[in-house]
Length: 259
Image 1 (cartoon, one colour):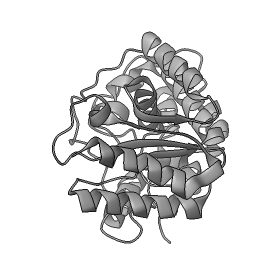
Image 2: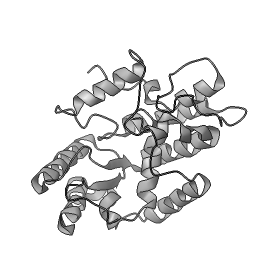
Image 3: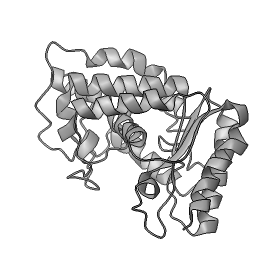
Image 4: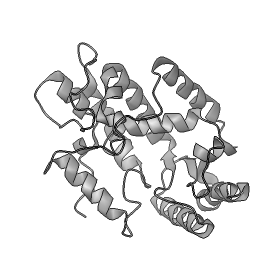
């Protein structure tokens, strides 16, 4: 692996997004100087506005870049538009404030793919961690980095999830159905149509504003679920259950699980 290959990923963002590109950089293991020979390139892209066609073309080009370089590839980085990124980060800040126990639930400990909070935490880490090949056309990065630093100063998060790869979803539940759909798409042309793909405003955009209201409660939820390897089940029974479940993607009404 050479630095040139990581730089090419940012060049791909320039080529595919043009004037719509606000910020781009490479983070993850390469920026931390901890990459393995076949590690994937963790790229962060911030757009002025979403553009599904350009995002799709970029994702396909990024996958080809990985394959040509003999690298692992399982997602196309973090590709957000400015408005959706702010909504996601605001929701994440609100979620941990109202539900600090979320740190000890499957939403984080088991790396639940249905967790809005987990997605926000991943993005905050991108923003706080070292970076390579930084492009910041709108000078947005300093404020985002400051926001990430403030988040982790208030809510220190362990980097290792104790229950990673042990996530258990209830059989025949909506969560299990959605997770199975996304897993099946990994080996099809629809591999980018997931929360680790493109068009992230579908899952982490304006809809979260309304759902943030469901996190309101009289007192913070400090008691985690009994089983930290299980994603909380959406339920109307009990405040703790409701506020845990409100950040789960199973609540979304825009998921394209049957198309």
